[in-house]
Amino acid sequence: MPDVRYAERYIKREEAYDLYGDDALAYARFQFEGDPLADRVAEAIMADPKVREQFNTALSDGIRSVAHPPACLRELFSEVDALPLWMEYDRMNLGGQTYRRMGMLAVAVLSSWALMNGYHSAAATKPLAFTGQLTERAPRRLAETGRYITEVMQPDAMHRFGTGFKLALRVRVMHAQVRVMIRRSGQWDDDAYGVPINQADMLGTLIEFSLLVLEGGRQLGFHFTDEEAEALVHLWRYNGYLQGVDSELLAHLENEAKGIRMANLLRLVQAGPDEESIAMAQALRVVPIQIARTRSERMVARFQTRVHDGLTWAFNGNEIAADLRIPNRHWRHVIVPTRMGIRVLERVRRTVPGGTWAADWVGNTSVRWEIEHALGGTEPTFRAKRTA
Image (cartoon, rainbow, N blue to C red):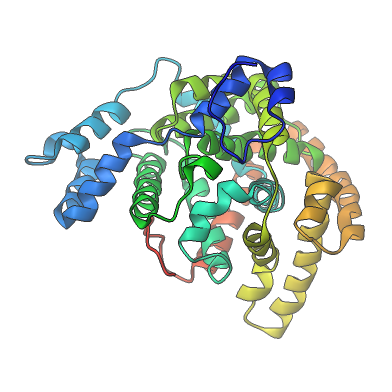
């Protein structure tokens, strides 16, 4: 096996190399690579609040509207304003519609599979642990994630001045600020974890938000054509481009099959959770109870929590759910009646004229209402701050 640098978190190295060859080596390398361009922007913003204003102006009106921007800001917008040759707006719009028509069940898959799967990797959650917001902000964190994803999925949201495009850049700079703060703290161990919010982990997030949501939707009974599935992956590939993910990694999202292969590699080499990531998983599962305001809402929330637990077992499998100490294992069977009901609705959608449009409208409206409720009338700032 070639001599490469591995983070301590990278397990089963020889097996990974035997199965995935150079991809396994590249994944090891990308755990030590971050986003230097965004980091320079973050450092400039932290040094001079005026740069934040310039960044916001460039987002809204273009970099040419900014007088005397720092070089790092010019470089950032030169990069993201250039369209990659593979990007297609029509495909992204189809991908967004595919996501939206799952409605709140997409949120359920996101929470019980994508996020829980991410929390199973202690190393990947360390940057969030650094902010001191492990458990007390779980409802807000989930709502902010939901807002970001929902806006990315709207029609034409990823055009240059679309809301999704702007949020992707805000999230990128927020991640960079977290990286810079961690670096300055002197409390991070690269040998153990790789670079904070590294390229490999950013790819993992893209996979969780695309491939896992697709597969979760299928397990719940949703039907996706090949074109719809590939369009959804394409949308997240472009999202990764805006967030500074390396083109070599983005090539693994050229289609769903390549993405699945990489997802299997990631699953193989993750070391598992620790007490901090388990605490995050436990906080996530009780979010409905935390935001319930009335007795009737609390009753519904307790039922939602059991369903969430059941889906966590059904989607992630026994090992991951047990590692995260998820209770209510017998509720994993809830997926069966859910699948039966969704399959009936999907047959109606596919046969009735306007069915897909109606599913899109109902799904999008329900998710937007739920996120507004969770955010309590305030909007995410997507700014990094440490509370502990």
